[in-house]
Image 1: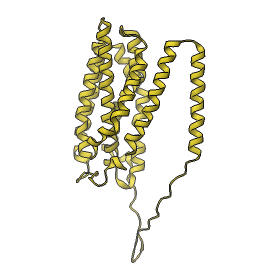
Image 2: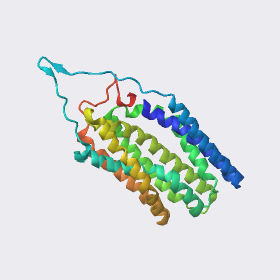
Image 3: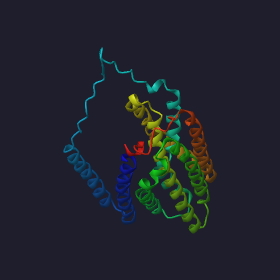
Image 4: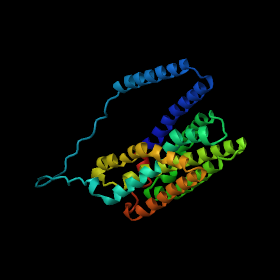
Length: 283
């Protein structure tokens, strides 16, 4: 289960970083930020040292042969000619927008459009990371097959809708209401992130031909790259539109979930690619 486990470990690091950022915002001063940057640089050196000790595991050689001699392997399928997979990747770019919400949208919205304290932003990030750490692996079992992963897209749509509405409510002048709504939004977007990560891990493999999975997953990775470029623009547009902009933002992503749910329906393996003895989530 490398996908969910990797996300859990990554969020442990983000949670620690969020706490340090919250402390830096509270303390203030350039010295704190200087030490944060120095510590970040040191962490990369530690990661490089650990990586240098890793080795690539040996792969078993396989020869396909017949009585007439070695067989010619079938030519891999190009993902660039697979319109269904390209459309699926395009919808994935939209569903990954929860990342931009936490990194760009929430901090700007809290600071400029709500009465909540600015220090709430890193705390909500920590809350999100803690939820991912606690729930990512346990909830992965609900997407253990490609059919189950497709079904998860509907609760993902519901979470995005609730998150958008909660951010709209957070514009209330009452501080308690604003903080409560922002917390609810953070929880909803985090649940959407967790469930979508499980569905995405499964569907991206299930829709790819076995002999071309590397190329297909490379194309699927472009969805996150596209989100990192367009995501800040999307959440900034939602902020500029005012409180109702967030409701439209959440509803738009929810609609994309429904579109993807319909798009992949007739293209999943039959029987499901993941079976009880060896699921894609366990690979």
